[in-house]
Length: 532
Image (cartoon, rainbow, N blue to C red; front, top):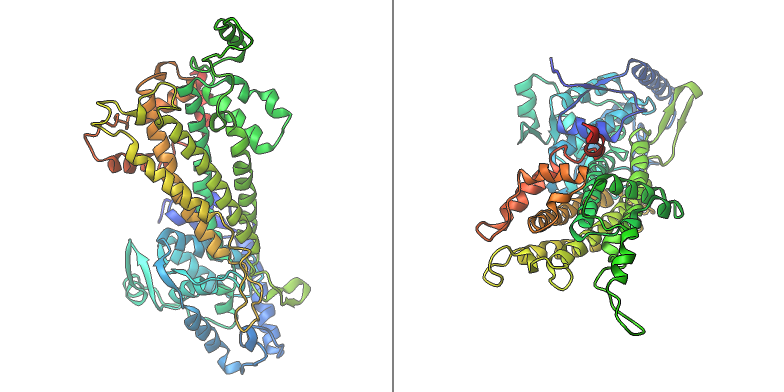
């Protein structure tokens, strides 16, 4: 018996955190008893309608523009298998196995709502696949995100009927071989079940959940690097004053400013506006104008961090709400509502909402990269870095290169993310004999966001390394309470880069430390411990 915590799927309250935990194997799933009663009622009503010779799309009709072709009762099960095989037409690299597991979980949660008319046997079989971590092989390319993720979910359905390939214990194997090994019998689908598995947004939703998980961690670390920048350059405090942000009260701006203030609280590096006037006047010379060497205001990449990251934080929050709504929706067609004696033909499979917020997320992540890349440049350029060695070189300048070469990683990746920020959800192309004449490209948008977030991790990793290198020259002894704690944690893995090793090794180590740990899941732990 597995000791993993269990997520009870009700169809109504699956969170992004749950989707991630199920996908990576930290949690297993079980089905809510009340939800199963709804599913049984839905199936019973569907069976009654089929027996009464009602014409129901995808049950006793063909699909898409062929929906006027009515199928005889003795072929309606074969219809479901034919749909799956014909639409399992994806190409490209396989979706990560943990995301494929998450797709199964999201699809199962949709079916458990009780509006799809599938049998309980199918739901229980999907539970076994998830809990045994049998991940369908799903190629990345194919969905237009309108009649659901048809191609992606057809590959998922293949595994359920015992065809195609699956990942099991990290290896790609024939599904028949794995089922034989585990004593599993593939599902023989009944009417409606093939289209119920395929006709929805579960692939784009699972991808979006993982994209958002990474985006939130990027935002958290961007707040840390914002605070570190203030510490390194002796940034001026009033750009983060609470009253400043109250008069421009965007929720993301207020939140980011408060987070950065909390991080640097207690710092001896921050310049206080109230102390600057006398220092500046102390440099006064005769004449109409005199020039001070003291910064009156910091550059935008430091001073405007709350304003720049405000829409990033708000985009992540909006996308989170949208993705969780989609994950707990009945995105199928037709929809069966037995208590109202209705079978409703509509378009809940359409992925425009996911496509829109994933495009927005790409813009947000490109903005975050712009900020990070400019701060890296400030750290490395001797004309901008306020007395730090050029390229943060600790040795003989010219003989050793410091961070010169590594900067190209940030520059090129930021440029790539700017390109990925272009929307795809507006790029509808009519297909399916113009039956699908307005499509969402939601899965393309989610894949694009997932890639942009992976890229952004490269940029932010380099910024953190550059900042730690800068602290080796100055200001590490006067850090704030929370920034100091974070610095000490990171310093355990950090070595000053002195050209004695390949830079790539440092990047790999720190990318894993920053993004594959729980260090930055909750920043408040670093300042809430101040009294301890």
